[in-house]
Amino acid sequence: MEMKRINAGKLRAIGYEPRERTLRVELDDGSVIDYSGVGNEVWRRLSTSGSAWSYYRDNIEEEFTGRRGIVRTQKKPDPLDELFKAASDDAEP
Image (tube, rainbow, N blue to C red; front, side, top):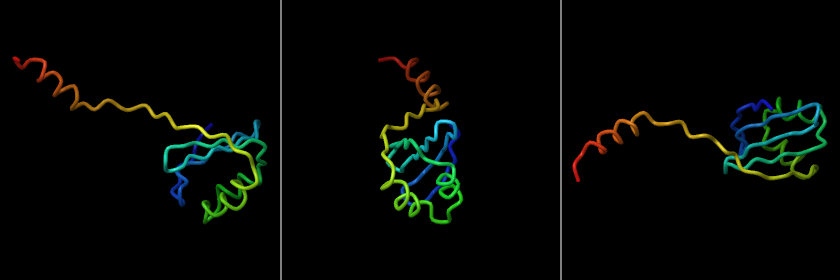
């Protein structure tokens, strides 16, 4: 599912899978909520709303049952970690 990055209230990203009729929202605390049975019109209104957080609270959060999860992001390696790790490995105890 492709996620659209937004910054509206506590919303950080939203995505929709039309075949499954599943809406996914990512919140600022790192949690993800999947809502099933969400129609295309609800998605369209959320994704184009000037106040997506209000629309979400009023029309999705209270109207659909969500399943909560946690975003698992893969940390990108920091090149400085390798540099300093190599330097500390060479140091004598």
